[in-house]
Image (cartoon, rainbow, N blue to C red; front, top):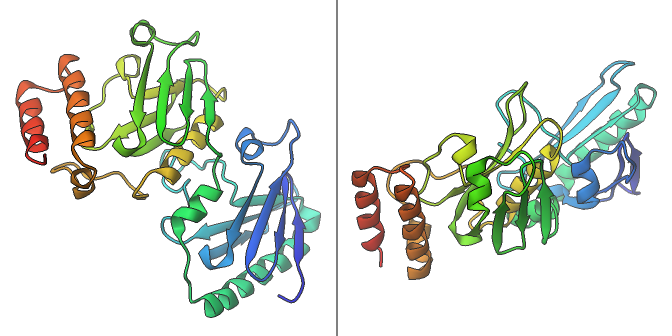
Length: 295
């Protein structure tokens, strides 16, 4: 690339050298909440799979998006099908800056190819993913309550005005990072709530939102981007970082490798689900027997 290129967009600036795209976001009130929380991040060029550029029009302006190698984008798969979500990997700008933006997009594409030749494509996708999310401890607040992640545990607390009576009575729950298979996020659609949902290894049962003690709901735009960032942050830190939740059926091997403590924690969670009527006697006995067989 020769010299560092810089591109200014609506909510931030990208600076590109021979190895990295460095992204710094503005702090103004019009900047999306998620981007203000992330503040700044860096993407190694070897982690970039594709650079997508759209010219747009006078009303919408240009758009540039980085697509990363598998496992490097913690926002991948979050959101309802066909509905985009805010991501730090996208930059937009006014129509009159289109030519400069397209020039920079071409430069990034060329630099990506050169970086792969030099580095051989070596990159730790989990390290890249963690650079694109919030730094623990991080808290997301909605009208229903709060979700807190300290790097090792996730706590859901239902103390907001929109919390159901069942969740107010439950007050809060905590989940160890080792127990979590995936954090999922769904944006609010029309009059339905948005959701942050914690899915545990070997536990996939769900119920209505008012009685689902694995969820924190958002209403309208309030808390929606914060819960999206929370889901991405949890997924970026969980080990192993998998793009999708484990399929239904036998529990995955990583659970057995975590030792007796993780197995017993999962049994306790199953017992709670059974007591709440979310698992039948047969389902509870079968899953419990399978877990005990791993001790």
